[in-house]
Image (tube, rainbow, N blue to C red; front, side, top):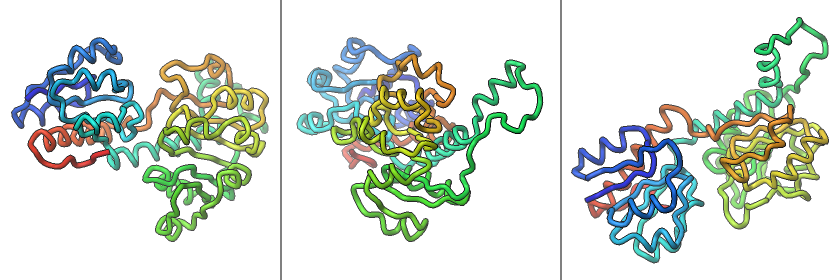
Length: 316
């Protein structure tokens, strides 16, 4: 049976599939596969390992002649029409758990970078503009005593909360479901979204992208933020109305923002480049050797299980 991988990922995936007798082909260009190339390469395969950059909509699914499983190399799966795939008898899988710590680490990195002007400071030194210690040079804010609002208290949101608590913060969270064990372990309190936005000094987003979460933080919600608030997004760019966020950053209505994802990724709003109160990263949430290897291994094992007649390990 044939498996197509839409981009080069860690070799462990290809090795595992070949060891189990599958014929594997990989898209070798260092850029997202085009729709035309995707369709051409997946018409006659039994499984496809996809990335977030691959839009697997009805039109693509209808071109599959015998595909039994779409294994998404990501925890999110908003790039796939899951319901339509299900109607066609195709199993869709993702890679949860294995990237939780990596993404929570990055959220913590962005929080600290925003709070202490790490990027402007690094730039200043590199450009030989550091002329010595000054009492008011790049004054940041301390985490101690601050309130951190976690929007989306799933695995990654909870792990991010656990990372900020040792800094002397208290945590509130917004979620569609109550998390009693999380509360017991961390002392976090569940609050409404409006209450979280009004009371939090630091806000970290950890929601999937759905119709309900698209532009969840719109102009009205962003207007509730504290003047010295820090907003960090390692989830999906479309959850925030990016144009409105840029407006409040430009007018210094919040302290700063740390972004790893963008509304029109990989295209960035050019105004972001000129703001000194935003940290912008190239979608590095799961970018650790450990996480990416485990993601590749899990995606491959999902394919192996389904094509061997067994249940998927992590079906969506």
